[in-house]
Length: 111
Image (cartoon, rainbow, N blue to C red; front, side, top):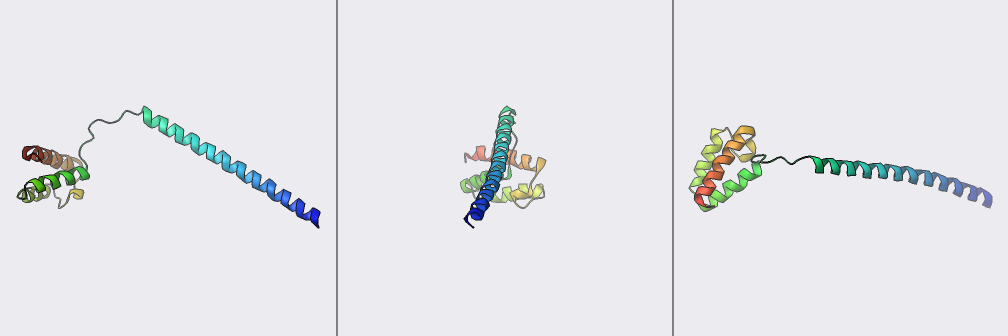
């Protein structure tokens, strides 16, 4: 009876060791893949001036409207020109155009 239990324990230990080895191999592969991705990212040159984002538009519009509340109507009109009610409705050229306009307005107001 005791010999049977010892034999069963040994079999379970062998299975557990095999599982742990597979986990270790998978972990090593994941670490190697992550390292490769980091190296590739470091080698890729960062894009210069990717343009305005919706978050940029939101923050500039907020800064302008805090500086001069009367500009809220102008901001809404500019968004409407590009078929948008809010900044997240903008994309592509419209996003860049509104961003440039807001940037100039912000600079003009000193906001």
